[in-house]
Length: 428
Image 1 (tube, one colour):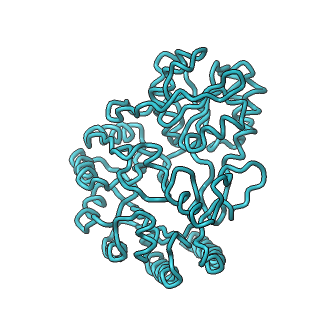
Image 2: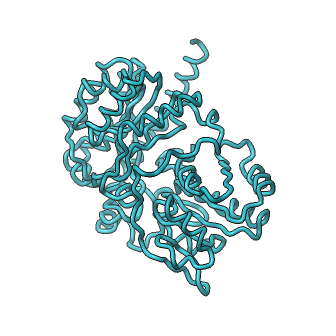
Image 3: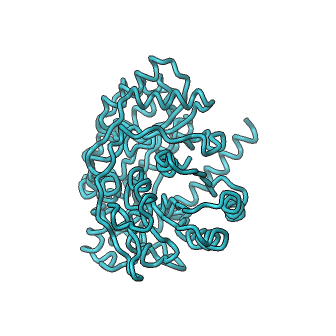
């Protein structure tokens, strides 16, 4: 469910609004043309949520779909003005505006307050903070605006999409907070949403969950960067779900250091069926450079809890070739990956994934990669045309050869797991 664009649409109370999501269409571009022809918009907003899937294996570059999308908009609704926004856009806002002339306005960072104000000032966008626009062929920026008071924002409108098409496997997201106080050096969340937590009350969060249940939706995900920070907030939400006796299933991202058996059992009783940890590394040197505030012992603790606590599946993700990773640290992580996958998957309690760090601007890893000569300071992290994945992902220079070996191992393991899953489905 396109949560960001639905939040913006909810704020456009004085406008007629329609939402089209090509991700759930059998004919994405044909469906867009049909929607534009029927709705005949004055303004078209494009949400660029992700530039790519950030996967070192099975990489997909979503950004390549932007120009074909704009071509259909310009052909079908030539008089409509076009604005772009979303997390992916904001990371590369100036670059995209300079390269893609079909976009008239760029909405930088959160758009719930900026977009309604922009629509009142389409001919004088310089009056609106947080907006990129064009003047005499030059891209202008009005400056950063304050982030909205998240708790005061209404629930995202759900009537603008077919919720049933998103139900299952976490397709429907609920935010309990925005912002992240952590400083993981590869992550853009503090840049996009600020480092100060803006939290909704547990009662307000569960009001939205209850509204979903009334609409027949009982499966969702908490789309926070970290649901369990602060832990007392997550606990209060779980208790409120239990108090209202809501029968739901959900999953969330968690931070391992503060997790206890008691919390996992509480979350399970409140409907949690899957919890994921971005553990990233095992060696102390790599964890330190990645900005993590936990240790290998914390990772082992939650791994053991994953084996012991029934009713919740658990996922772990590690980075291959992280900054300051050592050969010994990489070997230890690969052993943990293989052993842990065998144990968790045989018990049907989850699994462990490997990935590589996507280098993004405004992150510590970007600065580190430049300082170590992994990339040049003027490296194009938003390439046009053919994309060379090796130019976009960080690999610690001493581990390049080993990283290639691990990638072959991961592809082979993924293929084996796929065959096992097909066998299970075929034979019950």
